[in-house]
Image (cartoon, rainbow, N blue to C red; front, side, top):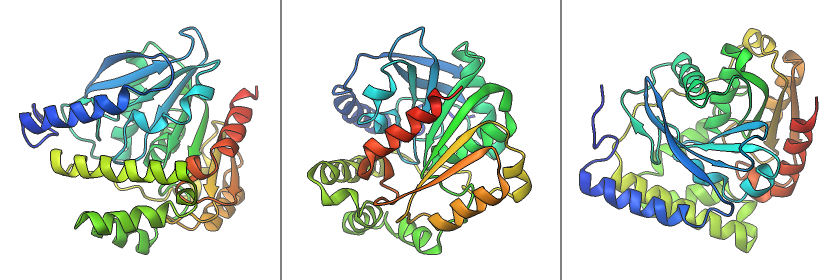
Length: 295
């Protein structure tokens, strides 16, 4: 079992990180309600926006990201939905872990317990990057929990991680300059605009604070699903992949899903890579909301 100040390196660094986090959270663009939800993996922090009686929409962040990564998308998502952005209990943010995940079953079980703690029987689930990996396994392993799922720029799932991406990701922790180069490579389409450049710079700053304040944590590696697993997903799902994706081969992922997973709609989005929700924000919102509105 884990105990405070884990996952922080010290109590002082916990306070430093949370002060930085709260500064970011203060500009959340819509009203929100926050609370902790108890699970067997620890206390999970969530921020809810939109009508409390709206259809529930749960948002899972990417790796090394928190609920705050949904800042630029939350307003339209929460317009008619009870949008619940989550700080993964296995990653950064305000959640307080008591144990780590050891398998994809643990990831699915955590989401199951989170929904139970929120008194939600069935939800729409949207994930970004690693969050998409989690969402895909919830769709496979806990289908009764989901009405629909959306996978944005999934890590693993349908195509293996690129060796180039893995090597650059591992090297990115060596220095701020290497991390900057890695981020700009992943966000190559987004950084062409001032807004995209601003978000990329903030991501670099956020990650540097995380590296300084937080311990290294064990991670369930995002691997590819088998053909049989993809075919066994019956929850209506949407996978959006940018044509310039660096984490994996975008075309391989889309072609494979189209060939083996009849319940998953796969779309290749031009002009974006792993920066998909930034570089093509409006297109992502249009496709996601249209899919979630289907009955």
